[in-house]
Amino acid sequence: MRVAELSRRTGVSVASIKYYLREGLLPAGERTGPNQADYGDAHVHRLRLVRALLDVGGISVAAAKEVLGVVDDEHVTLHDSLGVAQDAVMRRSEPLEDEAGARAEKVLDDLASRRGWRVSPENPGRRAVVDVLATLERLDHGEVGGLLESYAAAVEGFADEEVGAVVVEEDRGRSVEGVVTGIVLGGALLLGLRGMAQENASRQRLV
Amino acid sequence: MRVAELSRRTGVSVASIKYYLREGLLPAGERTGPNQADYGDAHVHRLRLVRALLDVGGISVAAAKEVLGVVDDEHVTLHDSLGVAQDAVMRRSEPLEDEAGARAEKVLDDLASRRGWRVSPENPGRRAVVDVLATLERLDHGEVGGLLESYAAAVEGFADEEVGAVVVEEDRGRSVEGVVTGIVLGGALLLGLRGMAQENASRQRLV
Image (cartoon, rainbow over all chains, first blue to last red; front, side):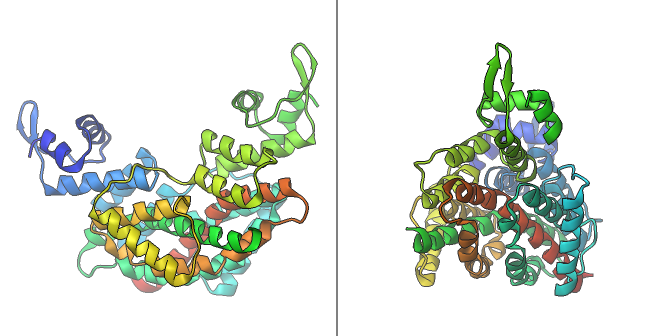
């Protein structure tokens, strides 16, 4: 199909499609003339995925480019794709090196060892948690950091199911796409449900 | 203290401080001369909070302005502050009106009624969940949406503790600041721990 038809089928403007092509989020179509290319169903699907990551998942174009690069690179294993996708979507701020940071590292290492979690020091989630815990202490909002154990118990309850859900035997591409979708959209799903449960809890306590 | 001292104590540049003052994220200091103002400890604290929300929580300046407005407005109750803070940080995309959207609404209403959650139709989390579920169906990644029940059980396990943690008797300002901090930084904490637990689960399944 031509680009106009691709736009009609996906509801994405031709200008946006051209932008995604330039940014490498969408692979080029098959060239059929000097100013013309042909697109297939794979482009329709990829375009929907790009819009889902950007509009619903709320990640940046740069982060989307990184995670889609993992989907396309057959040399990245399913396990490694998890780390790369996490890295692309998690916040990276320059951590301060102070006592609060050192204490946060210690608290988190103790938690991981008590729960028997094997996690590499470079895990993007680990880095984020250290940063948040130290920030909460510096802000004197330790009560939020006090939820650490409850959050850890909660994520432990579904992490194995999350990994299992995306593994499709013999189809690396689909599995990796599931990892990426799961990290970005699954994260939005989890936070949305948390918002609902918080309103319900707040109604019972505060209204 | 002068702005230079405020900058030194917080590690935030004078240019950034002036930007936050212009944007209304930081209240003006007490004017002591035509080009001079005096800042106090409350400014130091507010500046740390602003940086935490932006750099660690990853929210936009516009969203930070909204949530800080709730902290400052004594007419907003603690229960209402939760909704406003959620609204400021959750993704808003224009939902498509199609069958996938209608099915997602139905699935979510069934879940809430089965779990006895009392949640208003305007809850920002509810809106986000409907959007994500419909998007996952359109993308043919229903396996991620299949985690809905497990996520719901998980958030139910800590929502009441989250609300209870931030309530400080007779101190509305501190409680609301806790709500805001909890929603933004607590969310980052939860997603970071999820990343750690996922690596651990993936190691056991896939390595």
